[in-house]
Length: 241
Image 1 (cartoon, rainbow, N blue to C red):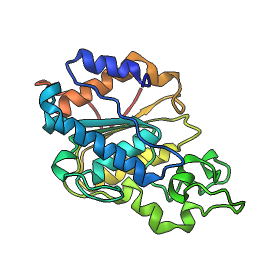
Image 2: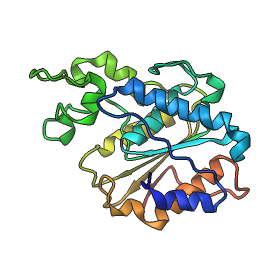
Image 3: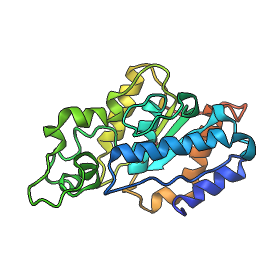
């Protein structure tokens, strides 16, 4: 619950209601993760009056697997896709998405045996294949193409998707920078709003991500995209910090 606490404090100081939602992880599968996330969104809608939340301005933020889940919510939040339970679509609308070093294309996670995500016990593999005590090696995403595509935000783009802020470090050794760049490029080519920001020298969850400048940048982007600030910000399509 203390993860990204600096960012949460910066947002709270700006008058933003901040809620931290947990979700089931391994041995639970992707469907359970999405169900938990959608139910958390529904709770915020249902309690909007209590916490003085504007349901039209709810953003989702996550890092690593949470960044992937944020991207997925931004693309499927108003559909029953992947989720185990039905949640009213009007209680799942997302107004903005912030993904910190998240992945977008499961087809490419595990394609290179030199990278850590090739490990069949890696979270992305277990998320798709499930947990098994059997000794055989589970299928890789390239061998279960359709399942991987259905779980990839990159292949779920459509009109009406909210603005995305996609951030990644150019020294990330766990999730390839190409995952963020591919999502940003695909969204822009589809005419969607995508901001791509690359942190120079930043790895996967390393100290660079906890600098005040990063929190302020995310805050300012959200204030602009959610119309909480009257002054436009001078943000380029791609920025390096």
